[in-house]
Image (tube, rainbow, N blue to C red; front, side, top):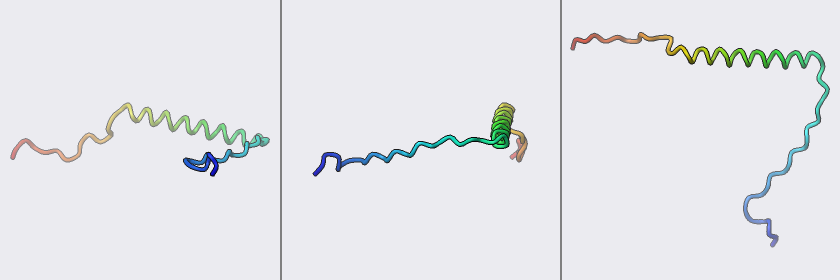
Length: 64
């Protein structure tokens, strides 16, 4: 019996990813995606500050 057989096995290392050359279109596309994500994050932060949009709902009178 070997000493490493029991217990949790170590995961295999993933191969290193090679950096591929990006064309100008790819660079522009990535920039556009980052800008859109930034806008969405800002809009979500603004929406969270205001509070509920619908304040009404069913209103009950004080009478029983």
